[in-house]
Image (tube, rainbow, N blue to C red; front, top):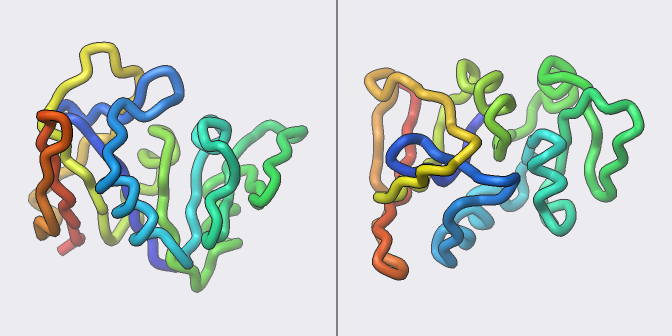
Length: 158
């Protein structure tokens, strides 16, 4: 199994607010879709509930301890360890939330980050801090949308 993460983060690692993304940029949504298409996406229950439906063209796995939770178009796992067993051989992209990112960070070979040159003072979900010195980085592209600058950067574990 190959583990990667994909997220859009602000200057202070902000991810979300009120179970929603803080920033939505067309170029970022296209990047997310292109990178994850045809692969397995793993997310927590709240992340799944924030989506309109399971993501098409991808194997969707939801981690939850809620035994009665049903997710149309997705498989349910009770723990990250269960995901590791179930996804042996898959290219897995961790897509949120914060606790799922935190658990899988030590296993992630690549981090596909959209780094947004902005802050959100009322964010309530954050991407875990990581030691950038353990990764090489490659800037893929930079954009400006509505006066907000952001870049797609791939961090690869050294």
